[in-house]
Length: 353
Image: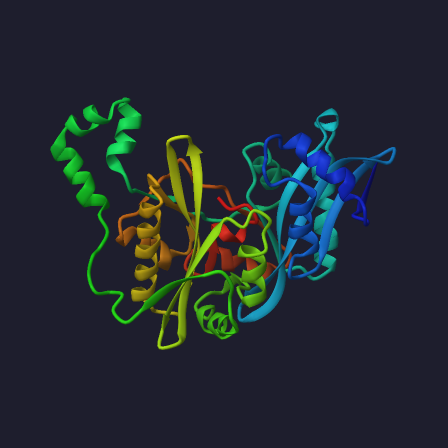
C-alpha cells in the first residue's frame, strides 16, 4: 500500500471510487470532477490517493481556495470527497491520507484547511488528527406555505386550515416579512453573467471580515455560471450604476409535490442593511413565484444571520453542519473563535448545504 500525490489520469479510477462510496450522488462524474479540480480558479490540484497493486482504493482531496486572511490574500483549502473502498475500510487508510496531506499542505504554505465532516469522520478529525471544531450557527429556515406544510404533517389540507386557526394566524404573523420602503432607490436585477464592477465591489465588501473566500469576477463566474448543473439564479442590487450586493438562489425539488428554496450566497457593501434586506425579500418573492414551500439559508456570519432572523427566518438546530479546521499557523486559530470575524455561506462548498 502506498500513499502518493495525484497524477494525470488518476481520475479514471477516482471517479468510479467516489461513485461506489457515495452512491446516488449527482455530483460525481468526470465533467464535475474536472470543473471542481482542474478548472478551479487556483488551478491547483491537491489530491492524495492510496494505491494497492496499481488500484486506487483511497482518496483524499482538498479544493484550493484563495482567501482574504487578515487583509492579505492567501491560499486555504476545503477538504472534501474523502473516500476509502469498502473492501479496505477499517485499515487506517483515511488517517494516513489525511496526515500525509497535512504535512505537505503545511510545507506548501497553506494557511488552514476546513472540512464539513460526516458523523463517522468527525471524531477522527478531532481525536486522531488534531483538528478543532469551529463554532457553527444552525441552518435558518422560513416557511413560505404554512397550509401546505401543515397539510403534509397532518395529511389533509382542509384539516390543516381547521386546526387552531388562531395558531395559524400567529404563525403567519411570526414568519411574515417586513414590508416597507427599505428598497427605495435600489434596483434588483437578475443576471446571467458578471461585469468588471464585481472586482471593485469585492474589495469594499470584504473589508469587515478577517476570513472570507475570494469572491471576485473570476471566482463567482466559475462557481455559479460555469458549474455543470448551472442551476443558480443570481440577482444584483445596484443604484445609479454602482453595485451594492448580490444574492445567489437555488431551487431544490424535495418530492413530486414539494420544493424548497435555498439562499446559497449573499454579500453586500459594509453597513448596507437596506441592501441585505432588499435582496432577502427578492429571494422570498422569487421562491414564492416558483411555489417553494420553504426557504433555507446556511450563513456563518453573525451580521447577516441576525438580519435573516429579523425578516422571519428561524434557526433549525437539527440541521447544524459540523465545521472543523486545521490551522498550520498558530496565530490564525483565534480568527475562527468569533462568528463575527469570518464569513462562510453554503456557496463556499462546491455542493452547498
